[in-house]
Length: 262
Image (cartoon, rainbow, N blue to C red; front, side, top):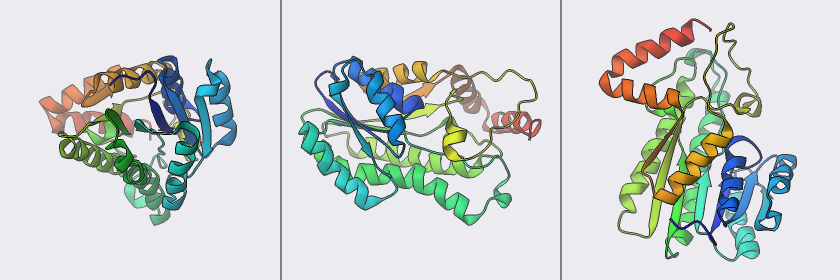
C-alpha cells in the first residue's frame, strides 16, 4: 500500500507500539487520527510528531460501540476520508491460572482485545471498501500461535482476533482492502501497567524483548507490503517455527519456562 497522503486511524496510540506506528506512518507522509483513552499520552504522541499538524487526537474507549461510531464522524470532519485502520489497543490479565481469574477480569480482556477490534472494523470497514486502496491491520499475538500458561485467556482473546482478522483477509480478497495481522512476541512496552497488572519477576534472568521502535517499523513495513502476517521479534519467530515442528514440544517448552517464575 502507498502510505504517503493516506489517512490512518491508529488505536492504542498514546504509548508503546501504537505511538511508534503513528509516528512511523506520519514519517512516511500519512495523516493519523490517534486514538486512546490516555489524553496526556495522546498529547505526547502528537508533540513527538515532526509534522504535528498531520495528527489529530481522539480520547475514545474502543469497547464503547457508540463512541466508536461517533469517532468515525470526528475523523472524517478533520481528515475528510479514512484509508486505513490499525488496531493496536489491547490489555493482558494477571499472570495466573484460568481458575484464579474472575468473570469480570476475563470479560474485560475479551471486551478490549476482541470486542474493541470488532467495533473498529464494523464501523470503519464500509468506508474502507469505498477507497481505491485501503488497509486494515489487527493486533493479534504470539500467544495466538501457541499457548502461554498464566495468560491463557489473553491468548484466547488474541486467538479470536487472529481468526477474525485472517477471516476478513479471505473475505476481502476481491476488494481494494488489504488485511494485515500482527503477531508480536515480548515487546518492551508498558502493557502490564496499562492493563493494571504486575509483571512477572524473571528472577534475575535476561528476558529478550523487542523495542517498540523496532516493532513499529516492522508494522509500518508490513502495511506498506500488504503482508498477510507480521511476526515481530526473535522470540516470536523462533517459537512460531518451533510450534510448526511440534505443537506439543513448543507448548511444554513455554509452560516450563513460565512455571519456573510463577
